[in-house]
Length: 419
Image (tube, rainbow, N blue to C red):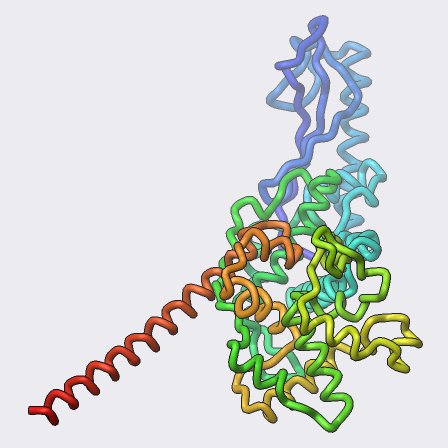
């Protein structure tokens, strides 16, 4: 609830739309400088309207009836305002108008929007994406609690509200660990809120988009990936522990196909088909974007498919590989990284980055082809990896400079010895 509000009511006519010398009468509710107009479904002769008093002039029966009606409207609108005050609810011009018209349900709140979005999108969004929206919903509720309110009408979401929410996210320290959110994590929550508010705007739940002036500020981070030597170290390492061997195989398979965790887990025999070149291809739809991807199966990936053909666990799930949770998989990858002396934060998603960089772009595969293999909707997304390759070129040239410098030193030493 707002601690202080300036509430006024006035009556006016729309003189720009005069017809048969008559104009329509409106009520105007103003709260804290923001207006809401109500059509009163009444007309008056323009010359008989007193714009200063907001009343009809004279003692004609028509004027008396109109003024009596305006008094009734005024009383009902003030009653609506008083009811909202007593209910300690959110007071704005739109909420008073909605209460007066008996259309309170048409003044939607933020949490109503979030619930609607998460329910309606449950079928079209992947589980992972929907889970992120639930996390954003949690932070919205925490923010509202900090503001000491239970909810807020969509019409009350302003640029200031968004700035305050961003500040809240940046300063918030989760209870389970003492680490604040990084900039891009904050922006992801803002981005999800923006998508939901845009949905409300398209459905005409709000009159204007409060995000028009809000500019997100993302910090570009280089995508981490494995070098050729690091990948080879993992491939050549044999694990006696079955769970580590499975996780290694799944990771390597992703490095040579570019498929994400969930897409690898969902693969079955129906996803294998003969491609345009007569070879075996993987044809599937990415769960995240639902885009179809067609990937020629490279020899190493083919060997891994054959390795688990007929495995007791794949027979049960009817998938190409035994299923394992993403959480356990990433946990075991940390063990593999330690055993293989890889200092990078090894996660399954690094395999997808490795496919884009070390396996394809670094070996001359055109970026347009890589974009199709990854199932990206925009080539700009794939170009992030191209920038990583530029970094690799820089590293390679630095190494070349060291080799040339070493050769030059050797030549100098030889010449000295000769002389």
